[in-house]
Picture 1 (cartoon, rainbow, N blue to C red):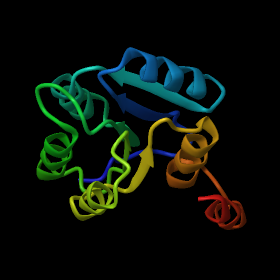
Picture 2 (picture 1 turned 30 degrees about the vertical axis):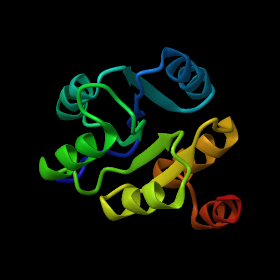
Picture 3 (picture 1 turned 90 degrees about the vertical axis):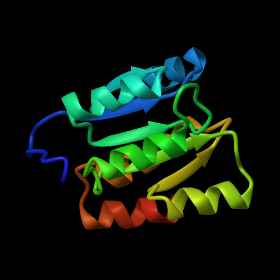
Picture 4 (picture 1 turned 180 degrees about the vertical axis):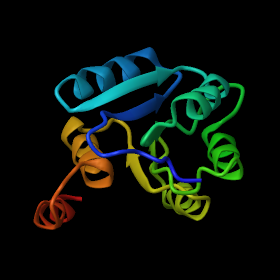
Length: 142
């Protein structure tokens, strides 16, 4: 299943993290961007949001209560959201979790503490309405 987004529609980013401070930082970041930000401190609730709102991109913490980020990622892939970009946003910066993230269907990996411009650039690159030239410029920053 693809996310089925039409041109001209405001794109949605779902931010999933059990830390309110991280979610507040992401909400502030998206206020200056042309995206609607949804937040969830529960991965199980976030699964319902994915089904209901069909976000264009997910920013996902790996260390979550109830269902960790790995389980969440597997669940949405099993539900048919194979093309939905999932950016893992986590404090786990070692090579092994990063490699696992890509192997299990993650699109990109950002370590905490994150720089807002890095998140902004990755989101723009993955779901922004950019020309090829603009994408090429962003690739140099990623």
